[in-house]
Length: 427
Ligand SMILES: Cc1cc2nc3c(=O)[nH]c(=O)nc-3n(C[C@H](O)[C@H](O)[C@H](O)COP(=O)(O)O)c2cc1C
Image (cartoon, rainbow, N blue to C red; front, side):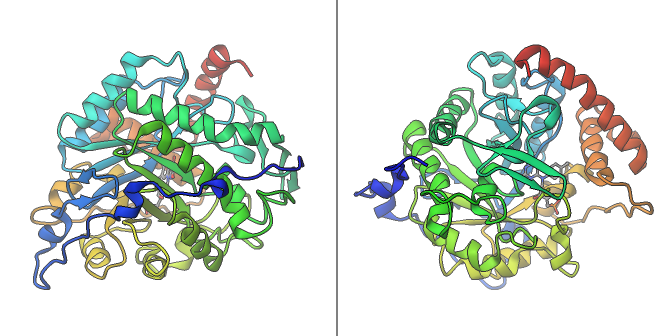
């Protein structure tokens, strides 16, 4: 590695004023507050933005892009429906700053020549009913979708069937600028915030993980070094979007993988990131690395990460979103009331019932989660993705696929989109 290749954020001498000011504290609720009142409280972020209640759709790679990196009408309709049905915030999963390291060919791409009309239609549809829409800025790194990319991570890897090259020093140095340009573009296209994706084994999670990151320069080794790239990206994004625009991070509580990021490491990462101009951390866990355990394995039936989130309060003094395993309103209310979470992130529950937020903000009622009898590798994610497609096309009521059918449809859609992606972006 080059001498003098120092993370920029370490060179910062002064903290921006908005950090010195701290963020408005969250008013404690009376102990007899109703579930609807607890979930209905607005949440002020350090940047000054206010989320209207405590229910968010966590990032999902919804596979509703057109295969050329642009949103579709079906996608705009689905996000409008979620917003009309009471969500404070939706996060579009895996919006790519560059077309070269996508997670899937249904991802959106914040390319210079993106279809601004289609993006504005999406952001207008999702925000007009008075809700926030954030873009999750992704880079799949070593886990980039091989048919349309050339996977690269912090270090070269050849383990458990996963092979990738190491990024060059120049490619690493370009990352903060890449994310900053994408964030500015997201803002100009009408997104009301961004979430930096540093979870689930994708590029920035790879930087944090000793399993993926074997670098011996300023980006590898100690936890501050492994966190350095994320911090640089946060500062670059803040410079690009200004002080009043929300910047979130999605981060693993642990990789749940032998040799990966542990909970103790993750708390140290959060302690370092607490000094950066982030507004909220979204706690998740697990990776798509071959052989990784599912996040639900550690949870015993309830929400997966609330215990970790409570521990994170000691090192993170900004709002916390917690995502994973919320199936009932009681669980969501419990997480807020206990102080574990300020915001509840829901993914699968909102694939089952778009009306859930308004239900939880009024009389209550929980979704019926399916029980799958067969096990099909990749089938559950495919099932939820195809259900999203059905909802977006107003076919949700008739959706009756089993896991195998869902997987086949999902792969057939991806095959079509791979052709379109290659036509547009090459590769
Ligand atoms: C179909 C589907 C796609 C997902 N795509 C993403 C994604 O693009 N980015 C991300 O951070 N998480 C993604 N997730 C994970 C969810 O955001 C969430 O962390 C996880 O599903 C646990 O939450 P849940 O128990 O409410 O489903 C996805 C989940 C599903 C079901």
